[in-house]
Figure 1 (cartoon, rainbow, N blue to C red):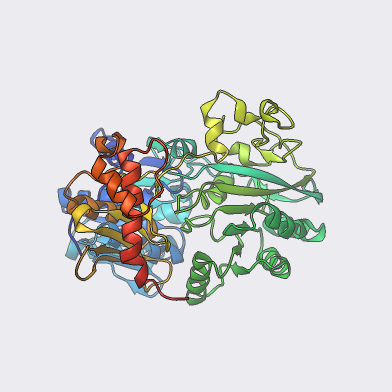
Figure 2: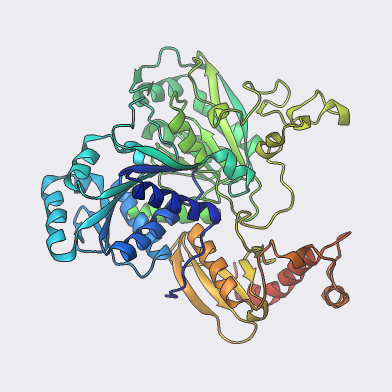
Length: 549
């Protein structure tokens, strides 16, 4: 594994500096809040590495579900491969590692917690406790673990530092020292724009649904959805608005998830069910089928709202009406990651009669993000996407406003590079392979790993054998390593902000493009033409190795 330090985005470095400054000022338990898709794991993995190097002490990372422990370990190893990473979960008990990733359900048991504490006698103290999804941190199981390490500093990371049940978090977390919202991520093009369609289910009445912990009680909500036929509107809405999109449906119960998958399949839309009881191997297979398009829609009973990365997903179906803003943000966040060819995230919101004014909808993602609180009467979308009356449309619409954020949330994007928030110019071959040019050194390629759903970072030189630089990484981690390797290999500045990209192309560049039979856009700039040339050349070199279907 290459030992080169991974390149952080500027805001990720800012977050690390904010946390270390807070510790230096005496804040023992700071928290950072970043929207889903902005790389929380990258931040706390790099922070853990720097903490160990600086102090010589060990790090304990807490995750709130057993199945998330292995996922967190894979990401940490991908970002900081030099670290010794162990797991405390069920039968696993690697308590002596430099970084211990622990399931809270396991680590909070007295016998297991004692073993972790005893490991400090042999391998040194735990000096830092990091809590992923730290809005769970007020639960007694978390507090029990925190109390066992009174001398350790802490860090909480989450996409939303709030709970649906309204319980305050100030008793655990001292201060939010760094925060970036979903609107900020969209504006900076680190996240996909979001737009919504309200799907009417006329017979759905939520007024009689029982409430528990500040939200609708899942079982009672599931019965209300099933008995009124609200789930039967999903296939038609999906076919009308998202027929070419990879999607995820959020349902309140296993029964409603299974029913939704069934009616989708009956309408010709391939669908599979993920629940808490789905075996690990079957879950992995289903995720890979979803990524490759063999399954178009995943129907789940709230198990994908946290800790699951599916950046190819571009449609979220909210078939679980909620009064919890944190839950709503988590569900929508599953679709906001960027991905090649993805222009926006479409949210299909199942709404009916009897909804109170506390029902969360797309307008609750962030104050001011959406100017209209009701769907447009013509296009039925939030915000309105009708063409305006000035250009032949049915009515004045939000798109004509002078407010710049409206353009972002409607999914209107200019031509941007793949992984738009990246520092390098990511491109795609004609066969669909993601790569970044590395000058005379060839290309850095993201190649589908033998492990389903993960990616290898490969150096494809202009001549000679390909070299795997990093293996079996999540897409976000793989792209970050790809940028890092391209920077190291290229003989000139390949970043998309390089000044040469804005200049007019040279005669030699124009002649070369002509020989490659590239159609030249009007007023083309050197960077744009360079990308077209790179795609033409890389397609010839790389696509021949793609598996034949």
